[in-house]
Image (cartoon, one colour):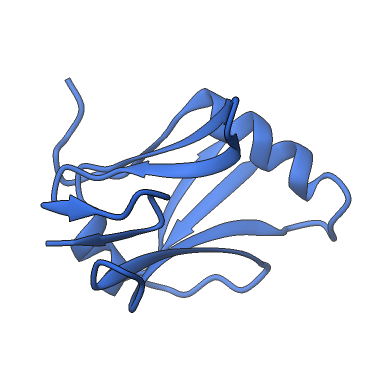
Length: 111
């Protein structure tokens, strides 16, 4: 059973992140954050960075790191970050148990 306070990253997402950062400078990570905006009130942001903050949650596997800042963590607790490749396209998706509603594209949500 997973800890409901943690954020997890699927194996599919780690594989995709690994492909993305393969051409980037050593130490590049994927930062996942939550900001105000989007159609439902909050939106997910995905950025490549080499900057790590002292209070970041760091999720690592096979030398690949995903960072979540402490403010975003409040909104992402218990979430899984996944990568989906289906008929309508490829995207990172956040399966967030805290979201009470989300937009059709899955990039914004409300609590």
